[in-house]
Image (tube, rainbow, N blue to C red; front, side, top):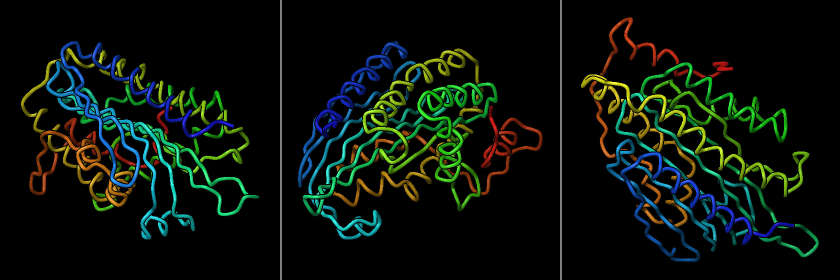
Length: 303
């Protein structure tokens, strides 16, 4: 059976691969690394890229933490144990170009020791990847979803539809009645009871992690050299405000990090460097901005 140490080591390798590939894609920016330790157990590597050719701000973070869960987190997870171990890689990239999308990915593993020797530890995998275009380019959305479906289908033909619906429901800004972007896939508490072995589920997690670079570098290449206007840049800042609202109000990873004494700078690296909240903004009828708003809905069949 795979160990938590093996999982953490593989996630660190994925972090290394993604950072190297993003630096090559950007051509200017380089990641700065800060290693940190968590009061209570464990730590991680925060890597931030800023002011590159394409990437205005981005983070590719690895963590492996352990300790005791606060009571409110135990209640939220519906578990009785207190001791836990969690490891994962979390990525958010904010480009400087309004036609290059924001992207987020997370792969993670969670484990709690058994309360009795005759039972297995409580353990599961979670993760997902979702795309938040400032302007929804339908061909890009179709490419993104087709790639994710191919990843899912190589492990289980039920995964894509199930995890896409989960992403639509999860990445939903309820107070705005709109999705954060064009969705993707999202899953949690994935275990060997899903018809796959622990080794296969771990392979799925790693394959998803390694899908990030081919997906995102293709989307960057398609759009980075397009001209854009000041009005489009202002719209980008407006859309970033929606991203910020979701992460601060609804995001489960943000809440978990804050409630388990995580490193604040690493948790909040997902926030954009610049965002704007324009009062009661209404896009012009027939505009590309209005079209984007019309496509921020659950249940769109992109493929």
